[in-house]
Amino acid sequence: MEGEGGVPLETLKEESQSRHSLPASFEANSLQKSNWGFLLTGLVGGTLVAVYAVATPFITPALRKVCLPFVPATTKQIENVVKMLRRRRGSLVDIGSGDGRIVIAAAKEGFTAVGYELNPWLVWYSRYRAWREGVHGSAKFYISDLWKVTLSQYSNVVVFGVPQMMLQLEKKLELELEDDARVIACRFPFPHWTPDHVTGEGIDTVWAYDASTFRGRETRP
Image (cartoon, rainbow, N blue to C red; front, side, top):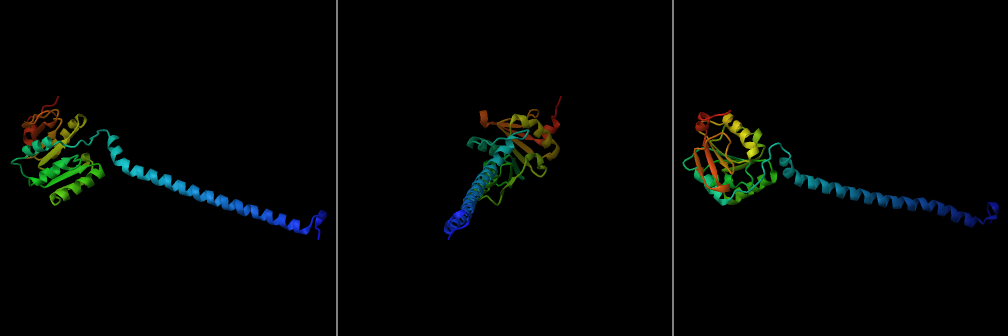
């Protein structure tokens, strides 16, 4: 049997089926490409989120006006800090506590010690170390910016600072600490205070300042 133009009807049917089958094949390929696109987008997005989550705690402090980098305390520095704490009582705070070495050492000496640190990874690691050392009951760590923490409740303050922050920190401590408090500075002294005690040499030098003394000797231009 022939259709229009003398073309066999069977041929017309085959051409018609072929024309209908092409879009279906095209749609399948498009769907497959779309699925791969979603998968690739998800993988890239997930990777970026993971990198952001890991890197942000390390990058953010560096973007602040005053950067307090993490440099682990040496064994000798810890020994010198503990020496400055002899015959001292009350609570202790380490502002910028890093991996928790000072706080843990103070807790072992009988102090109720607290560490404030901006980097959450270091805070979690410090908590683990305190638990491992058996002093997690008296050594606590918190994720916090030292400039936003009120220090009036602490009798002993330890700081591993940098020169750019010491003047500003000096003013903060003068305003907030009680007269019986002691400030222990490591690596860098305060610019205007006269230390009551000094021990160690080089990078292991530690300066101790009693609040009652530096308030009485305050001489600023």
